Amino acid sequence: MTVGDLLRYYRVNQNKTLKEFAGSIIDRSYYSKVEKNIHQISINNLIDLLNYNQINTTEFIGKLDPNYENYQSKLQTQRKLMEEAYYQVDKDKLQEIKMLVSESDFSEKDKEMQTLIASGFIELLSPDNPNQKLRDKIKKQVFEIPNFNSTKFMLYCNSMRFYSLSDNKTIVKRLIEQYKNYESKIVQKSLISIVINILIFSIEENDFKNMDYYISFVNNIPTNPDIFFYKNIMGFFTSFIQYKNKKDKSALKYCNLIIENISIAGMPKYAKELSEFKKKYQ
Image (cartoon, rainbow, N blue to C red):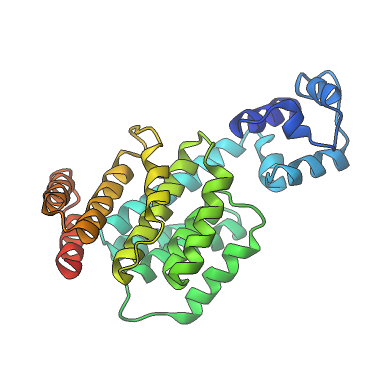
């Protein structure tokens, strides 16, 4: 993949026109020929262009390496295993993944990040014994990453419980406005995950102000196999809020149906977590 090919990939993924993507950094006509590999772009203009469009420079350069995609695939696969272990409420599996990370051929930086993400999941499963030092480290790391890539999304999602509901609402609304037009499945899944957390915290604090904004955003995302599970969980908490707000007992029946389906699908521990949550806040 050439620099021009990769720039076009990011521009299309961000749903931007040539003019919107190039801004005032490069003439639109000249930039068009960069994408077509007719003209070259200076390193200074390239960095300015990447920063302007909030594209991680290291990630961009890495994608020009033919081994990059395979490396990233390994990282994402491992993170998917972490998510699955979390939703299975399996701390032992998460500890096992941390061990695999330490023995992997990932860079030291990626090992540190993978370990931090796994530790964040374990921390979420240990509410009665909080590790404040770890929580502070995760919160600090979230805002040291310059742009919200998949790593930052996951770290923030893991650390949302360490912020106030008001702060989370502000951050999530900003993220939705910035990324709502992205068609990336990873971005969509990440946004739905953090909205689910907003709904959970709102139920816990019995504060349902402006919930329609977050619910409508997720409802407008087309359902596909990659996010089917997350849309189901979103449906559970949306229905539960409907019950809390309007005392609509039919909404509880829908919650029970989702719990049953999740259990049948092979996630009985997570189904039990939802059932206990419903019972606690009903």
